[in-house]
Every structure is written in structure tokens, then in C-alpha cells.
Image (tube, rainbow, N blue to C red; front, side):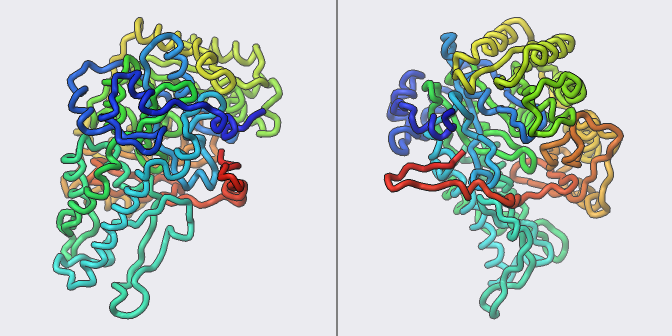
Length: 556
């Protein structure tokens, strides 16, 4: 059996100019990064912005397990299947982060015969967007510390610096650091912290900004610290906004690549819905809607995180109205949620399936709360049995969901036709009445509690004293109308990663809250969630190498 990277390396790609031309995009509207990657120009947006939107389909999943779900694989395969049915489809994906690529790889390029290519480029430096975000973030940090060093005219309290440095790598040793050691000229000594680049507020800003002007305004509103008098200090106050915008000028443009079957893929921004908002950029999604009849996009991790943030943050901010949701599950993952060990998942076990399917049930209920039609798809494995598939099909249909098996990993677009037909039928015959879960006018605690009780199924919320104080301050500063971005582990509906299935009678613990004023949301950290992940005991990096002729091996 060929690995994903072997399949990707054997693929015959079309020059990206040809992929674009098939969708009416000329060479003048592309900024080429070699033969197979390009950015779409601002001028192209001006040409297409008044076109009617195509349909918008979100792909999400149950809570991830070590058994794998295949959300991106399904997204890619569904796009390829739509093309086989002569539908003009575009997929809009998130960019992978280097941290998990070298740690525990998540599969942000898809897999098998449902991948986007060039896969190695995408998983490594791609077009440099993440490097630009890292640089803009750390420029602001440098200017902040320099301001304190050079007389501190703004009266910044070094004990109340909230802006963190970032790096696109998993590195637990950088979570808590001390900067400014050395002599007097080496800066003010203070505690500092790093987040992974994808959790940076600048990543969220890039993903949510409409254009350069909006980007600049959002960057200017970033709160970096507080004064000795307790007043907020912004990037505008530090006069850092223009330089940061200059670093992000190209990064804000969506990236165009292709699937193995040459379906266009706009890949831009956004992973990690467990610690950030976890969606690809608004610009990429809006461009895809103008280019296609059907746009298929994804959000990070399970529907409790990715879909909730897609609906309550991205759609709210961008005015998007999804027409349908594809919810991805696997027989193996449902059995894992039912208590079966990873080593035993290949064996038929209907009892475990009945126990574990409650996780899928909760995710169906959650999406239905937003009044969007749901199609459940099973990402098929050869070990799945007819009895298991039938049980899940009947379970979904009893709950008003369409159901389809997906075999896109093995068969590419051909293996996604059954799913594509269900999606098309849903788009034609079921109406979406999308609305957000909560209104802007609710207090921040009310919003947190609504997400915790209605989406996670918690009985209540417990706040650390520091978190309660932070919430009160954020509301006093005038940010009480912002949506909530919950930072929670992806493995469980609760904030305890070990509680599988559909946990009950648990509390959500809020330990820290801060405002991302530029992004336009309030972040609530739950449980033990970290904004800087660590590498595992055996990192994926151990198995990655390059041959004498430059061929990369071991990349997921």
C-alpha cells in the first residue's frame, strides 16, 4: 500500500495557470510561486466581488481519536466528486502548521487519493504566510520591549505585558521564559511567553480581515499591555501598525493549488480550533464562493470546536450563511468512543458501536441547533462490516440526517460520488435557516455558559477567580459584545481529554480569559489546554529525511 507522500509524489500536476484558466482566472490575476502554486490578486477580487455566491458546504467531524476521522480527506474527495458530476466546485482549506508536521501530524493535506498537491510544499514553507505572521507578531513584541527600554513614554507596566512572542513549531520549553537578561542595554528583565504561530492573534486577524484596510485597522487595535494606571496600550500606540501591515501585504492574498484530480483548492490560514478560531480565511472562502457553484470548506477538529467557531465567529463576522454541513465519522472512531482499544478496532463490535455512537449523536444535535441540514458520512475502512455501516445509517436517518459512505481515500473523486449526490440532493431540497447560537447582547459569561451547556453538554461553568476578574475588566473596557473563542481540548466534549463518548454531569473550568481586540473575539482557556503544544516522545520529525536527489521521505 502506497503512503500518502508516495501517492502525492507520483501525481502529475497541471500547471496552476491551467487549473486557474478552467475557472476563468487569467495569468494576470495570479502571483506565481513556481509552476504549481499561486496567490490570487486583489484585482481579481474587484472583478468577481459582485457575482452571486455559490452554495457553501462546511465539512466537520466528530471528536478526533487516534483511529483517525479523515475530515480533510473527505473535503478534498467531495470536491473531486463534484467535478466528476460536472459541478463547478472549489475547496477552501486551512494551511498546515510546521509544529504538528514534525510532532503529531494531523493530515491537513488530505490523504490517499484525496489530497491537495504539491503536498510537501504545503506541509513545509508553502508560500511563506506563516513566516510572515510570525515576523509581524515578533516585530510587535520587539517594538514593545524597545519602547520600555527607550524611556517608556507610554508608561507601560512590564508586569502587565499581555502580548506574547510566537513560533511555528511545537516547543514546550518556550511556554514560559525570561527575557532581558544581561546588562542594562539588553532590555528590561521580565517574564515572557511564546504561543505557536497559529494561535497568534495575528493569524486570526489575517483570517478574518476583509482587505488590507481592514487588516490595518484590526492590527492597530491589538492590545499589547496595560499602563501603570491600568489603561490598555495598543499596536497603534506603539506606531507598529504600518510595518506589521507591510510584512503581511502578500500573506493576506489567498493561495491557489490543486487536488490530485485538478480541482482548485484555496488554502489559506487558520488551523487549530482547539486553541484558536480554526477556520481558513474569510477572503479565501468568499473568493471560492464567487468562483464556483459549490464551495466546500472545513473547520478544525470536531464540531464542538471547529463548527461552533465557524458558525459563531467566522459566519457572524463575515456574513456567511452555510447551506449544508457534512459531518465525518468512522466506524473505528465510534468504537474507540465506545471503549475499544486502538489495537482491537478492526474487529466487528456492535455493542461498542452502540456505546460510542452517542458522540456522533451529540454532534448531529449541535449542528441542528444552528438550523443547517446535516449529511453524515462514514470515511470507509476495509475492516468495516456491513452490519456496522447499516447500524450507523439507520441511526442517522432516524435523526433526520442524510447518510453516505465515503471511499475517497481509496478511490479519489469516484469514491465520493455517493456523498456528493447526497449533498446535492440536500442543497436542492432542504433549506438552511442558519443562525448563530447566541446574540451579541448577551454578557460574556452568558455566552460561555451557552457554549458549555448547549454544545459541550456541561451542567455548568466554574471560573477561576482570575478569570472572573478578567471577564469583568474586558466588559468594563467595552468588549462585552464580542463573540467567545473557547480554547478546549479536541478529544472530548468536556475539558477532560479522557472523557470519551458523550460525557454528562461535568463542569467546564475557565482558568484564563483575554480579549483579542484586533481579531474581534474573547478567548476563554479551559482545563489544561496549552497555546504552545509540545513534541511527543517520538516526534514525526524522527522519520523525515531527504535523499541525495532531493526527494523527501517520511512526511505524512
